[in-house]
Picture 1 (tube, rainbow, N blue to C red):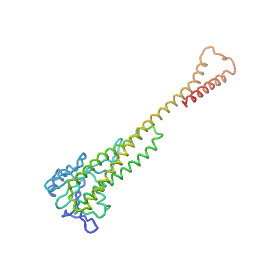
Picture 2: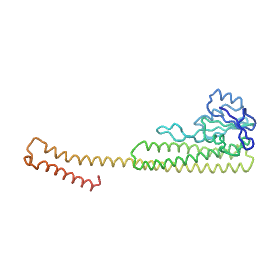
Picture 3: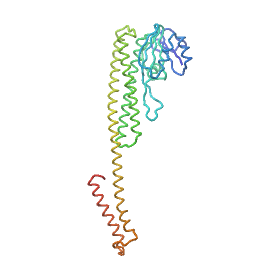
Picture 4: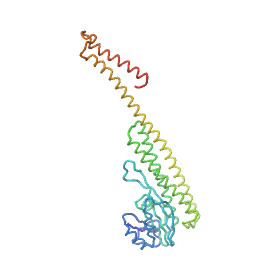
Length: 314
């Protein structure tokens, strides 16, 4: 699905056909034949389009015949979380600049590009390609930071539940967060290297000092997001080790109590078994033999309970 937009005054207007200075956004659904047709119509190398759809594509930039490609990894919510899947994953966004327009393409709709389509980002101009690319960088860092805070909030919630838990399901939920942080650590670090190289070689041909300062600010924010991700990862790893020990300790306590209860119940059973034998037993002809048996069992139980409590088994 291809849609093109152009800035007119303060409004982002959708156009019927691509025009000079417009932004072309390509979202699924599409297939290889569609991409080949788009490649011919837009005079863009086909591999620029297909590489941007590879989920394992690294953050990088490339230039071929005055057509430039920047691949940036952005975060998205994982809508089909099962078992140990990550809550958030990352996908590449391809940003292609030509002489006449700028193209973005991704394998999934994402909030980074949607924020521009939904007018949440103000005053951006697709005609100013370098500044628009920096705005996409900035919005990517913004969503990394937002999702990191959400992951940290979920971690706190799960930690409160894990204090008295013995269920593997709760640890698996923590593992989901851990997997998300692995994706984020890798992608944010790759994006940091990409931005540093883009700045060093001036790949975006930034004309104003303001744009260069803006890129520098985005790089600082990205470094902060990377630091946040690493801190949250370290905290989560320590928490998972701690709570794995807590769950094991809780299980040991339960087994200890069950063993103590088994020992206590075994005593009256043992006494009753002796007096239930078909052999001569003391006091068998006395009227108080049954109460005596009950009293003897109770006495033994009390002694055992006292000893178990003294050893802190109960």
